[in-house]
Amino acid sequence: MLSYYFQGLALGAAMILPLGPQNAFVMNQGIRRQYHLMIALLCAVSDLLLICAGIFGGSALLMQSPWLLALVTWGGVAFLLWYGFGALKTAMSSNLELASAEVMKQGRWKIIVTMLAVTWLNPHVYLDTFVALVTWGGVAFLLWYGFGALKTAMSSNLELASAEVMKQGRWKIIVTMLAVTWLNPHVYLDTFVVLGSLGGQLDVEPKRWFALGTVSASFLWFFGLAILAAWLAPRLRTAKAQRIINTLVGLVMWFIAFQLAKEGIHHVQELFN
Image 1 (cartoon, rainbow, N blue to C red):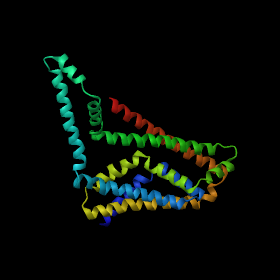
Image 2: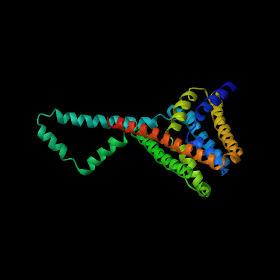
Image 3: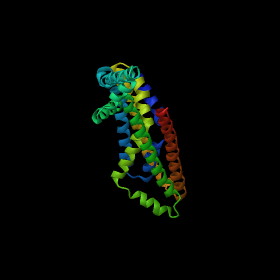
Image 4: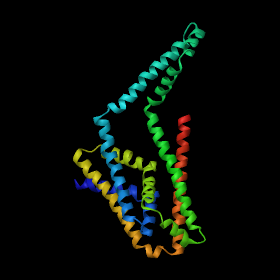
């Protein structure tokens, strides 16, 4: 079973090592020595929840409760068949004007119910809406966070600007960490699609070891990054180092925001094509 553990550990490490907003935030908090271990723990726990949901929840939901998706899907099928039949019936009517007039007599509530059915009985609308909300929420947050980092880096009085940043309360830091983690659509791709598809195919016991390996990678990485950054803090707290670090963090956040915006625009174009 250890082979499955190390497979999960290696895959988890491969997905978490690239520099992203989450890693940049943990590193920054480590350099400041400001709630860095708490932030590392919250990041690791967030990954734990997402990994378990992807490996156990996603596959279990489809295998054990397929009626959840089937209910919406077949409800949509029934409605679209009925609505399509009505449109074809009107189109093929020998007296098109009379048939069209009957359609025009529909009351306000029937039209409203039809609109609601068209919208809510389409299973794709839930995925599309979720992806759009996460993507554009992430873009807005990363632009705001990147602007703050660049503003600090370019301040004429870097010590004063850094002191203002250090005054952030615990809850503001926690909310920032949650936004960095949960407003990143790539995290759902990694945990639900990649890990979910690979781990979901395994039997119960190997699946547990595989999940444990991926979770271990998150805990080891985030705590290691936070502790290493805190240890290097005295060398990285010079004015020159702080300008470089804040500039890099700001540019990384903006670059990822730009990438997300491109994906979001592409997604919107697909919806309307």
